[in-house]
Image (tube, rainbow, N blue to C red; front, side, top):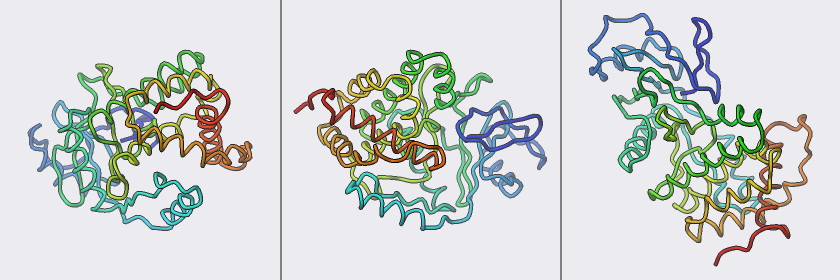
Length: 304
């Protein structure tokens, strides 16, 4: 759902809350509640994988099935997970196409039923999905990634305040006995009432991982997407926030995170230069933070 409007053109861009797109040319206007008919009529006309539309006074999102995904990336991730001996890094299948549509609809319904703030499924067919927007009264949600970038420009204290909101949002999901799919900062959004909502559920980690492993994966995903900002701001203060957010996590989750810190320690020595790519820099930052928070002399004692 990361779509930004520039002029009259709608462009995809990760991590930016988007403005509503104009209703594309198509059939005569439908009744606002006729979601299934709107999906049926608009799906063949929509060129993009994801786009927003106006349906009456509502803003809705239409996602269409794309081509199936290749498996090369999964094999590479499986090799990395085996090298680090970390089951939580086992790649989660996202086959794309109609399978991804079915998975997202199922997960949105389950998370919504658990009381979490996710888009509502308005209509579904095998090759497309119509879901609600998390904004209200004309005010769009704001992606946490964007809020973190703004806060970082203000200073370390502002950054850590927003970052802690993300930690609390993940802890809230886990307190409901469930997990996210890709808990990156770009998939957490602040709704107009201040509540953090969750988007992007085309895969289901629970198909290959235990509940504890899924929850550890959530923590590591969030850290991976934010570690470079946090480490540059205040690694020590961030560690205090991290352990506070995990205070009510299960013993297995905390133990697996400590294990990940030990087994990822050699990633601290990856080259820091940008020429090695953003993911290399992020992995290095994650490993250095986890080492400081769990393995160094300054790490707090592990609760038994």
